[in-house]
Length: 185
Image (cartoon, rainbow, N blue to C red; front, side, top):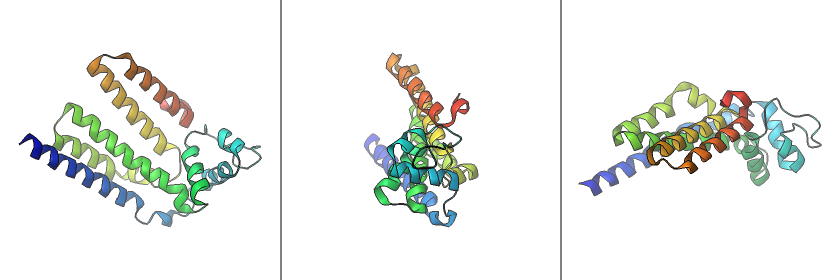
C-alpha cells in the first residue's frame, strides 16, 4: 500500500505540474512583449554583460530599469540563448510559476497529506492573479518563487534544527531583495 500510494502521488504531482505548465504556456505569445520596459532590458542584457549585470534597458547600460536586476537575468539569458521573441521573454516566467507550484506542493506535503498538498498546488496554479503574474514579465514571478523557496527552507530549518536551512532562507530573501527590494521583506 505505501508503494502504491507513492506511485499515485508521483503521477498526480506530474499531472499537476504538466497541467500548470500547459495553463501558463498556452497562448503565451498573445501577450506580445507584455511589459515592453522589461522586455527591452532583457534584450539589452542579452547583448551586453554590463547591461545584464545592472538591469539596464539599453546595451551601453546608461539607463537602468526601476527594479533591481535579478528578475531580468533569466529573461536575458533566455533571449541570449534563443533570440529575441515574446516566447523567449515570457517562458522563463511561466517556468518560474511551475516551479513555485512544485515548491508549494512539496512544502505542504511535509506537514499534511498528499491530497492537501496537491490541492494547495492546484489552488496556487489556478488563482487568477498567479495565472496573470506567471504569464507576464514583471519581477513578481521571481519574487513569489524566491519567497516560496524561503518558506520551504524555514520549514526545513524548523523541522531539523540545522542552521544551514536558515542561512539558505536568508540568502533567498537576499535574492528576493535583488528582485523587488523591500517588497521581499
